[in-house]
Image (cartoon, rainbow, N blue to C red; front, top):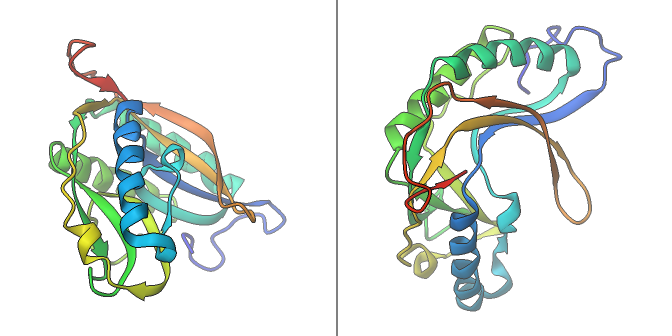
Length: 209
């Protein structure tokens, strides 16, 4: 739960499952899609791989929260975005939580832009906390979830695969709604928060997220 007991405002308000995240570039998604083809052959049906179009880098999972909380959070997040510049990022390296030998989650890490993403995440969490959010206790480690396992299993071979995405520019973060269904989650954008100062780059060098 993102909110402490009694902090939800109107109890009749619809609970909205939501999170704050960074998107990745279409070029990076295509590279990950190619990676998943080989990983699927390697791991078989043990891992439920995430569809590339659903992949994102979560900054804060809010859980089921009322609209009143989202309204207050949106105002605070807008202020955060105005104070941050865009980030040149790159995804690199595979890993697993809690370990490669007994994995429940398979992920791709961040290389370039890691420090900037961590700084932005800290500001996002601070803003959300000011309106009642209860942050996770575990340290933030920027990563992109690409697969999940119902039962812990060994994914050491997958974790050893080398991967490096193209560099891309993150010029905003988003507040997303998540609706769970039989075919998996469906995401929709509730609000976008453009970062105030954009990175200058040539279009043929970097792809905007």
